[in-house]
Image (tube, rainbow, N blue to C red):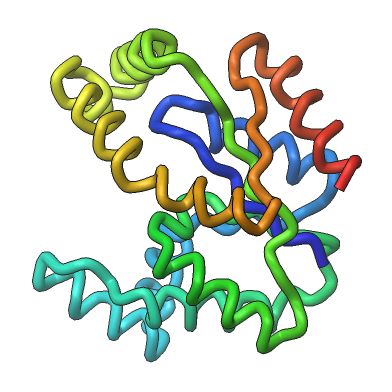
Length: 190
């Protein structure tokens, strides 16, 4: 099974491009936010554990999220690949994911990083804020902070996957179709 991490700053188009890869390759898209909400709604043991942390205003521990991913992977063994969106966000999470996948005789195939210039990200997020009503996309200072935090927190992940020869930057500027074509071409080459 192919395991891809779709990576990029806020506004890079990860959700749109993940759907493109799902449609083309019939991969499964794993969004950790959706996964957490689903487990909580289903009142699974891990979902109830996650809810306790969320209700207390704390981050859900990596082990809980990894457990949810493992349970999902155990149920979906018929898909040709998986796209991880929103996870891992730290080197510790990447190591935990690698350990879990290795125990299943699997591994991360590649980290596909959508590379978009700063000014383009701000423009896209402001447009998204206008059309979606998302308050975190409506204020330039908030957007700038999100992009800065992304850069600070994710550079170690880029370094981690570069050392493993699994980091693949993808130009994230152009039409949706042009970016999709670049991603599809890269996935085919893997």
